[in-house]
Image (cartoon, rainbow, N blue to C red; front, side, top):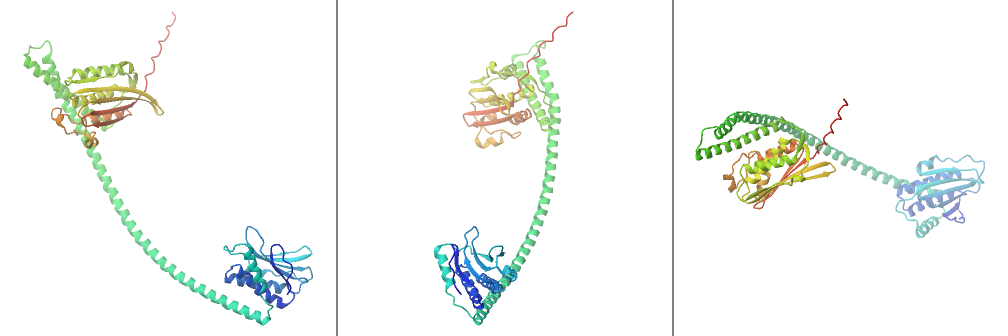
Length: 465
């Protein structure tokens, strides 16, 4: 066997002329694969494939074989068989193709060739030292006899069979583990399915219970609304009679009264007015909850509304040492809203502030601003009263709830003022927010949509006579 000059990417090249050369080619191929870090099975594949190709082409003129490591994106060992064209039949590539990654026959030039390629292991680094190690592995094999080759093939076959048996045992062990795992998964799936079914049954029962309780709450709410409506109607008639009779006694045409009688009747009239207002609030609250309170929107002159409201609040009796401050009339526009509901909102808030302020002032402020969501107007009621403790703030909007305090004994009420005001505010499309500091006062902000009233239409021109 002779060694030809190595090419740029070639590791070694040999001539194939005798059967001894083919035997040596098998050992050289296995050594090259081992030096490149390939596993035992790949070593045997390469050695067997090269032996088959060498035997098939043995006898061709100028037959050589070269081991190369071509550079490229996919590193591979390439073994190239070359010979001069002749009359020998085309090469049989099928046995080698079953063992190697890629085998191809190239013809058409002065020499024909077979290129057999197999990918390199991922961990092999292409360095000069690594290539030198592969060249040394290719050079250290002496020519072999047929008996030596057969013994080598037998050893390789025995080693391959041992490796195959070990792999079969490992595969059997893995299959046993997989079957046991599958049984565990199946048992877990069955257990989870049972738990899920029990949970679903519990959820269905809970849903039915919640639906039943929801129906009961709805029926209770409807009964409460009906009760409020009926009792409000029933109370309105005697209250009207009390107010009317007291005013009749106070009229100028009635029989003269002593000062004590007049004072007592004035107290009856004031109490009747208060009771009448509470009955109306109670009835409106019931209508609002039942969705029966109608909103009547129309242009409202806020100057007149606020002026009248201030006069009413001052006439009903102001606490000594408390001032009621109203906004500048020049800042109040004409807006489109429900005048009656807006008046009730502001009256309730001002009444609450005056009731729980012993000294200082109660202020009603107004502000209008345009935003991306549309124009809004804000009424703010602030006072310097006793304030509300922090732990009471979450409950001030509960119906019939009243904050505990020393002023509560002298200013009793129904506990509907703030809930009623917030309900009406939400009906008008707004929000009501409250903040308070004990001993410093309370601030209530009512934010409502502001729809400026359109300018009055010009008078139509008179027709010519």
